[in-house]
Length: 338
Image (cartoon, rainbow, N blue to C red; front, side, top):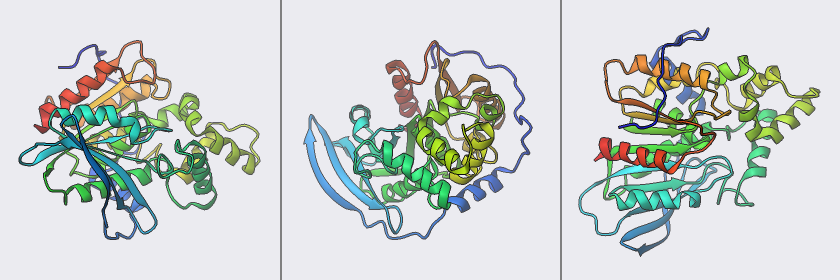
């Protein structure tokens, strides 16, 4: 099924990391992101039909202070319950940036949903979210409150699934999740801890933060939050942020991201549910040696579920998802959810 992939051969999984049981890892992550649950209180902001596809704008309460805006696309004349695919955008993106994919998925018989991540889209006064997103991470570094880098959107996604469970015409037993870059990281984290996600496709997001820190390959990833990182370093009296300071920054902003909740620890928790990972061969944000550590850990977890774990590494491709790779992702959902 997967075209143009590189052959993956054995690398050690642990990379010096102490192994924890899947149950303990999952419980620890859920405890970290947990917060008081409030009623979803969903609201429909608008709806319409174009070209046989119904489009719906909605919001729901993620917690006591955050409402999440979303877009839903589905076939206008559908009968029975349909499978659902959730789409998560990357840094600087919005739910609107995923409309083409949403419409494609709806045209293939899915209910397709995208939400704005924290400090992005309608959740940002500037629309793109870049400056407010950086400012939020800096506040987290300073105060220890919130987790705008990855973790809060994992919570929002779990609450979205709560909402999907209430939607007429949605089959909550057939929910898939795909995300890009930041959304790709959020995809594998959410799928690792929420078994209601039956199929996962993290795109250009799977990586080993630990390997990158230990091998001076963290600069490209850290570049996505450079303003927050550099400002935090200056406030700490560090002239230039290095790997040591980045560990300290991660410990405040995304605790466990390079240890207990790193890629090699979280990817196996998705097993045996179908998992397709998509990465670029030349992507500096997901360095290949660290990526292979993730794959090897996942391969062991999927040993008893042949065919449920596939990898697609786009040759001569950097931090991007090509149309061919996206088509492969859609085919993966069609195969496993329909």
